[in-house]
Length: 490
Ligand code: AMP
Ligand code: ZN
Image 1: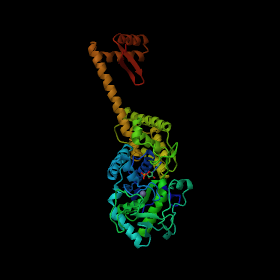
Image 2 (image 1 turned 90 degrees about the vertical axis):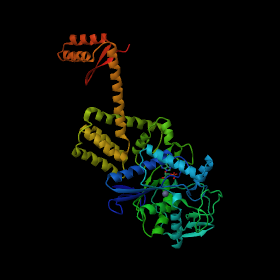
Image 3 (image 1 turned 90 degrees about the horizontal axis):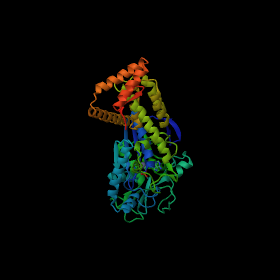
């Protein structure tokens, strides 16, 4: 598989550290508010990456943190703790806020068919691991204690700006306006590993440490949680592009200083979801959530489809007009799939040999830096293809292991709905015949006789039968599948 690697800024063949196994880390949500659909774009694309790696035969271990402490309103160690701000806003405790928004995050993720990572670890579970890592960094000479806090000393590194290849537009988003100088820092890019001094006295969560009562910096949590669960060699680290600097840059600095070797060779960054005002962000407010989409009548999976139609490395502009177009496309797609089984081809074995070229095309699309829109084209090719319906349905289900658009489920629901409507119609007709003293067999005989007359070009007889049935309130309907009847509407 070829992936664009932000580290180095080139498309590269993906080769994991250990053959057949992939260790993947995802920066989890900061749980002080609902995730917006921009955050969820990132998680959707990471989910596709994970599922495609599994589809390709890798044994994947995916780890994600939950940021429930230490993420300040500026990513550069200034401002208020986001969790504390959330707690104040809602007059609740920090832990209540964390629980509520963690549950909300996973509920939204489930609606988007995002698989829960194998390991999910809240930062507050790992305080001993953070302390151990900070201690080692001090012992190795990479960190210093100043003004009550522990800082990482970036001057100790030969190359701190590891994502220097990223273009300005990509890096700018990580830089916040409200950065005030911290006089304790030896150099501007140094960052906090452990806080004991902060400008907000009312920080709710504090722990004993060798440096006094305090709490961890945001960056240390991802390094420590990743190393705890995925070991010293991580294969892919993911996140939204705003995380590249300073968050991921700092994660790399401290992890490699701690480990003494390269930590993670592949970095996967998803570009932002934009709205009219630019990057969708929690701090700006007025953002869109999955619940809001549902309130407006949208199936969350249509938002997933919307995301998959464009490449993860391009900014994506959200408008309701664009989403409406996606809904139409999704409904048409489902109707076409429902038609496959409705044609009576839902049993029997798929033709695996005939399926192979379609799977190859699907794989080629995703092997090409996760080109999901081309993978969707491969799905349409299946529906247009010159293969039997069983094989088509098999391929749709196969591709949906990665795309996770709920296509088979939606098509089956459609088939069930149509069958229920059919059964209701039949019951009404039955009732009508009984009430009017007519036998079903007689009606069927008349319809068959009319078909014979038509076949013999005996139009007069065909019309006579049609009119006789009409006298009884029975209307013949012709279709390409033969004739059926309906009750005459008065
Ligand atoms: P947060 O909960 O703020 O820590 O963010 C969770 C994830 O969403 C991170 O990987 C961010 O980089 C990502 N993210 C934030 N805003 C956007 C956006 N507008 N579009 C796509 N991803 C985003
Ligand atoms: Zn992180």
